Image (tube, rainbow, N blue to C red; front, side):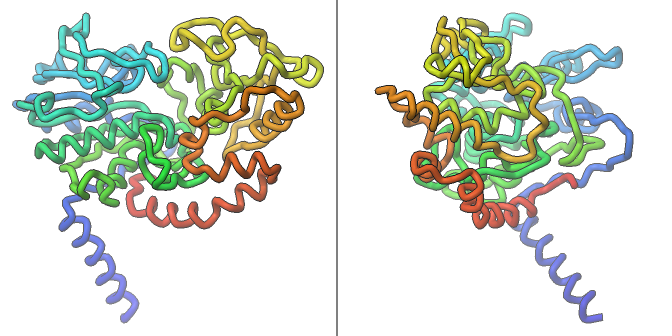
Length: 405
């Protein structure tokens, strides 16, 4: 009897905490075996009443799509307008509303040719919506496909949108989407000194949460400015768990063309902070890596980066690079360091004057320690052991905000 009394009191304590703090935790979705995964945006009937008679702003890009009854892909903005929802403006993250801009390219404000809606860029100097940009809005919808990696900047955009909405007392509705890298958690946890737009929160490189769960964590852990909290509602995915295999119906950004690139992205993106190319300027982005100086014998695979959509000026443009083709690599369930370590060793042996690492590497890693460890020749196994304590602490934090099994 004492056990049940203690359990009851603990449960009531947690419930009171969440209600008192103003955190709107999403209801656990009902999951049936063998049922199709349905992103929240496609469950229009479940949230339509929340939008009627309100002026809506939408944070969206090319991934903000739903399937019609005849399996056509329709943009959420087009769908809501057809239902006479008063959509007033669109906020666009990195790569723009239609998702064609280069990584890091400044996106300008403008108008959407199809809907004539004003497009407000949240990438460049204006990463956070201003009070004027949010004026006269009753609700902001956030619907962007994430890939579950700390340096993928859409979670930073989420942070600033939540913060701006909290300051202006505007509710935010996150339409949750599956995370294709939700099946594992790995990598160094970001240190406060390394905070930037490619890493704003003390989370590991791969955090194993959907963007809706992540939004709850931002709110619940008081990570917004001055520890304010926004009026947050998360609409859950149907028929989904963190181990559900899910292929995205549209590429989440110009240089993540398929499921293989998305799976390799957490490990290969660290190369972006080095002199090594990860295939930008080819059709195999984040599935290959190489360098012009590498040996043809040791690295028989070759590729030549050329300007293309999403990479107007790729690293080692028009130079033949020799490296590895990882398209047949088995699906990863941890951060793979061996390619980075081997490339550093090979590069050092070439005695090239230009450094292997650049300043962006530490921002991506979230810690200065990883570069030093690689330079000292520490093994991947020992490096990974150093992440254990921080990862265990993160798991305890993460558990409070999970919506799915």
